[in-house]
Length: 205
Image (cartoon, rainbow, N blue to C red; front, top):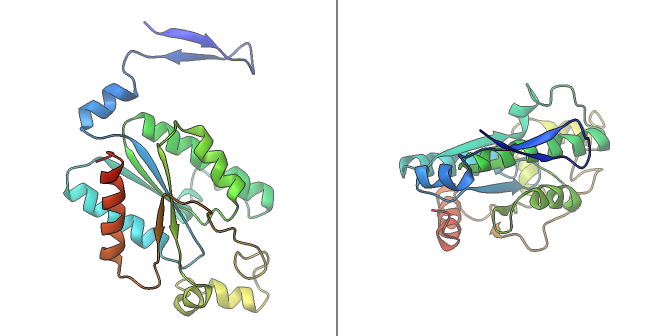
């Protein structure tokens, strides 16, 4: 049996509260759920660091899931373009997915440029206090352009891509990120160590 809480937004939709809840699922996994939201410029190293962190956590026996910006646009968000409205909706959808995965007791790693503070705040506000960790992958623009793994900066400089973050579209740096990674000066394993230390300090692992 489940109990139902009536929605305030639509009287025909109800929220069902089940007996197996987040606390039960987290206890099963011997970890605390959380969402690590990696944000930074294109080419900053978000996906690389998040992937290396997930690998380390898996080796330690923790249960994780990595949400990557490009990957979700192959499915969940394939109908969205890159307008301001579509980018906002992209982040909202990912936030909702991350929330569900955290409810399943997982440690979720999300790697998205997410250039605007209000979008990142939107996701933070979806989650209980302390469950959202903003991870600022702080790599200088010139280093991101030097790496340019997808050739996007070259296209943006040539005018082939419009509204490209860092070139003709603003990136708003986090003001008080829980984890600040100076990714232009450290190797990946050092950055993963910093993330592990932060997770331990917050008793997530």
